[in-house]
Length: 212
Image 1: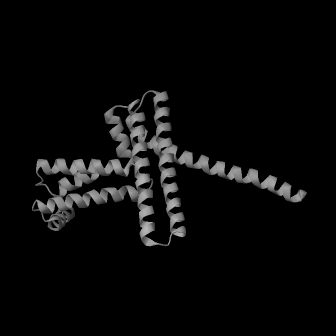
Image 2: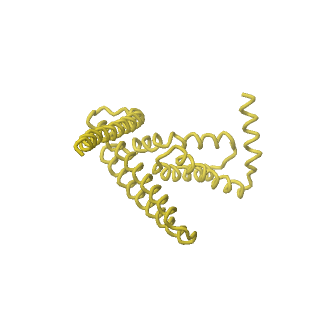
Image 3: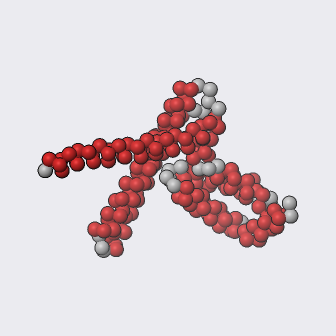
């Protein structure tokens, strides 16, 4: 019994050390990711730089916690509930709860940033967190369809910005890009109703790129 107690006493600190090490490594990864984005702002005040870094790291951690917790709860429901209708209802409730948590977190995050950054700087933070997909996609559509009217360009940009707000709340690259894919599909449907042949426009664009 004494030997067992000694063994447990030794294992617990090792387990705790391993957890702490993983947490520190995760924090360092998030810090590096955040600073890469913040460096684009050219902040002169080191204290502001550090505060904004902490805000972003905390945001990334909170996003991961919400998504991981929701995923675990859903897996638990799958094991417990066998009735499909009941399971679907409970899954929907969990998804709604996650959406609510993400919305509140999003508002809090932007509010925290606004205390230290300008609107233009916050826009750069948003673009950085979503890999600059808004501008890349917007410019690609302008190149692909040079005949887009001003109101169509405005609609495209508005939907891309809306997609970005959702994408910011995701914790994985795949899920971030999925939001933009969803809104690109919406815009393509919109253009089709306006009389554009998207497939023909894309094919012609690809030919132009080849001939450059």
